[in-house]
Length: 277
Image 1 (cartoon, one colour):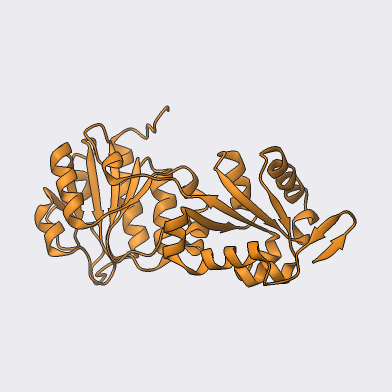
Image 2: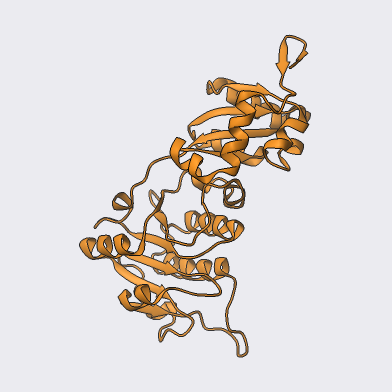
């Protein structure tokens, strides 16, 4: 461990805190057990402070203080009482590649949102996603769901971890404010029936276009992977199966683009009124 003035700078990859952060980055089971996940980059640190997300620790590299925004983040971490560990750029890179140049990596507390808390009779709009394996796509879906008024997102089997750092980075802070839960198909359908929520399934062969469906009702939007789509059990359970009309010769679109199409139509029907707005 090196000293810079009165401050100590970690330069060993065997440091206990560094080893734990590296393990959290690589091990989904550990993230779930400890309810902690990794986020990195200046913008995510700014969002975490702005939304008052609960933070366990921050790892700060020399590049953070090269900008006014970075220095503001460092002061914000101090005001919020977040433990700060100064580390070399090389050490940050051993945790997550790319974080060294940004100079900031944070360990965030993962909030607990049981599926039953997201799927109840007062819910307005929830997005349920099945089989989306690419964390970048999943993170982008989370970001758009939050932007377009979804009250939460349910991940179903086959999805990437929404709290993996690649998904967190793509979501640009959605995990700090958007309720996210995971469940299986059976529990999802049971909760939907109990709460009398409308099930609307994205289906490229569905008979309805989005604007033909009343999305002002309390609704679960079901979205599947680009390749496999939704499993038969979810398609059969849905009250409505909708497709986005596309030009001839185009069979499908990116799953995030499809999610935006459905979410935008729901927001349009609801007059673009979001929460307290």
